[in-house]
Image (cartoon, rainbow, N blue to C red; front, top):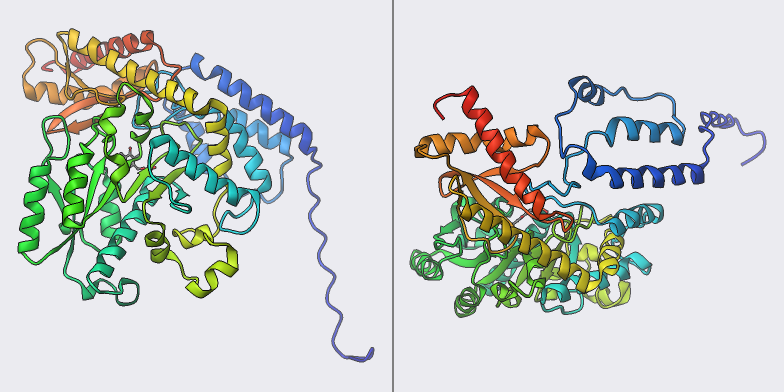
Length: 497
Ligand SMILES: *Cc1c(COP(=O)(O)O)cnc(C)c1O
């Protein structure tokens, strides 16, 4: 192009608004101090308290800032407006849902991982190889077989379940001579899956999302201890086959979310082998319970599953988010998600290929560093001791409840969840239900302990989940006295309870 071209010169780029004058190192040190102070002080304050309405509204209405704020100013806001209103799960007297305190090593690793900020989709960088290693560690911790590549970190068990059930669906189609990826479900009779009432809702979500229809997720009876009834399962499978349906999947639980029940895996695995059904185990909350020698026997046969979903972000305390899908047959998972032609796989990225061939995520966070740090900091033995402490505390809580005439244990304590209710002398069933429905929130508002509720076999209950090895026996006594205090308060304001 000649110098006399009529094309006007491009406008000079507008000057970038001045960046706030930042000293990253100073701010990083301040962050470390803030985080350390926060963790040191968690146990001293209330477990949880409702947010001040004005401050809640201020967060909701926060205007989009046109100009920037120096790092130090951001830290001030984080310290004053965010870290003052926690969920409560870092506290040793938090017994709600299945939310753990963060492992300190995991907290530190999170910052380092963010500083590197890779996409752990694949390639030759440390994060990718570390993920292979920690997935193997997780498999070794719970005693699950680990073929190379036989697992992947996910956002949680909800996502891990989608991956595992998708692989199960693909295998079922392949066995029926259908290429599901190309032809979809229309070419198949209805695929049916089996689970109990106790099974976590993420299984139904996955079944619905995968187009199987929740109608084809059959509810199988469970026994008095909340375990899947294998005789009922066998009968349901036979009935469905006779009706022209295609049974393909059984979901068992290694620790149900309601009562911590662990299914009897061996007889279920026998049936699945005989019927050629994929056995998926939901171990989100409870799979790591196998580390405690006192309850390890309950997990016999878990290693026979085709897939196991579990959550390092629960009992291990890896900072959220971190779930994991483990599969017995690596090809089945890769064959479900990979879009890399098989002739390219080896050359492109090594025999195992990219993580993005094994799941839904393409750009993937560096989850493995916080898993590595959490496990390496405590070691297998330290983790096992932490888990064993939680199960021992849970059994102790069960004993205290059993010994109290005004409290009732609603399920045997199998892992570290204690399901119970308050039953004041002379109260009828309706009153007890109404009372226990309101107890959790009342207890939470008192601020000293945090417990949540659930409905189990039609009964309103309290549900204490012990995941924090810093919890003491005194905390258990406080939990029960707080429940009684809350009950007295409720009965005073609503006579008739
Ligand atoms: C928490 C939980 C899930 C869901 O896992 P997310 O990590 O929350 O997605 C599934 N099953 C059980 C038993 C759980 O405790």
